[in-house]
Amino acid sequence: MKATLLFPDREIVERYYVPLIYTACRTCYSELEPEEIFRRAVAGEVATEKQQKLIAGVIESGHGSTIEHIVFTFGISGVSRTLSHQLVRHRAGVAFDQQSQRYVKYKGASTMTPASIAEADPALRERYEQQVAGALELYGELVEAGIPGEDARFVFPNATRTNLVMTTNLRALIHMSGLRLCTMAQWEIRRLFQLIRHEVFTVSPFLGSFLAPKCVPLGYCDEMNNRDGHCPIRPHKDVVLAAWSEKARAGRQGGTGGTVAERGPQAR
Ligand SMILES: Cc1cc2nc3c(=O)[nH]c(=O)nc-3n(C[C@H](O)[C@H](O)[C@H](O)COP(=O)(O)OP(=O)(O)OC[C@H]3O[C@@H](n4cnc5c(N)ncnc54)[C@H](O)[C@@H]3O)c2cc1C
Image (cartoon, rainbow, N blue to C red; front, top):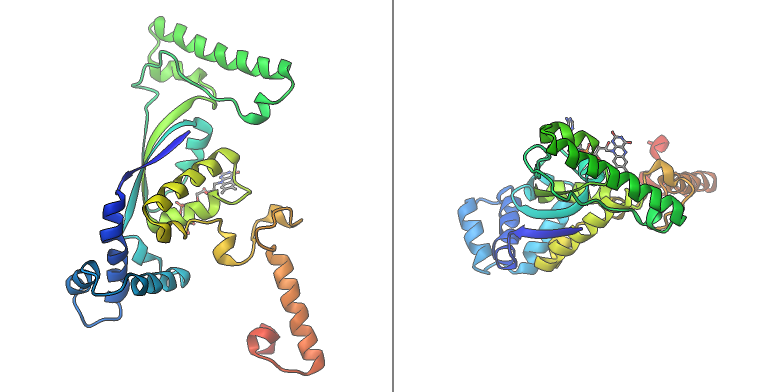
């Protein structure tokens, strides 16, 4: 599997991306015209740290439109159709183009074997490999017999590899990474987003730092399947809410007062 950042390169990101987001953020609170804010930011008249501080605060506050102004385009290759089906479920702020199984006549369509099957009982693995190879062989025979590719492809397994181009704005990329870097995500798409995060880090450690499992900015895990706490990245929200309510109850019993947030909403 490969994920390559096709556009922009490091120079463009360093020179324009942070100033562009900064301009979007600053325009909301400034008398200056966007053109002048952008000029000052690009010229270095506003320290990069100052720009980054404002941007980080705005992202943490969830004012997401400010980061829709910048986009990243990735070339993604050698992933399974299982992965691509999940990836293209994302709709907002993201565009895809995918290798066509109608127009590409696969001479030797390549497939992949998940590690769990590769490491399974050799007899079972062999049956998997035979099944997949058999499907590809039948595809070749169908095409040879004049069946159109768009119909012959019906025999392709989910293991078939594919290539895509994905362009996404930063807001959508943070959202997708939040879901797909989560340990509950399927291993292959999780691996893809680890590669994507690496690519963004390479051109901007600052922007790359926002690509994280969703529990990291949230501060807790909201996945039903982690109620047993087997993923330790953040405590499950049930645990957090129970601790919060216990603290509020103890505060009420002790008559210590505290803030409304500490006492809980029923104290209002
Ligand atoms: C661990 C995991 C397991 C999954 N399991 C399944 C499964 O079993 N079956 C299945 O079908 N899918 C499954 N999915 C896919 C999931 O349901 C979503 O379709 C997918 O993650 C796309 O995310 P999104 O809905 O946030 O869409 P995006 O397009 O990424 O949208 C981003 C955000 O924009 C907003 N938005 C986008 N479109 C609309 C709209 N039309 N109306 C209102 N708001 C909108 C929402 O706030 C949304 O969160 C799974 C996903 C994950 C991460």
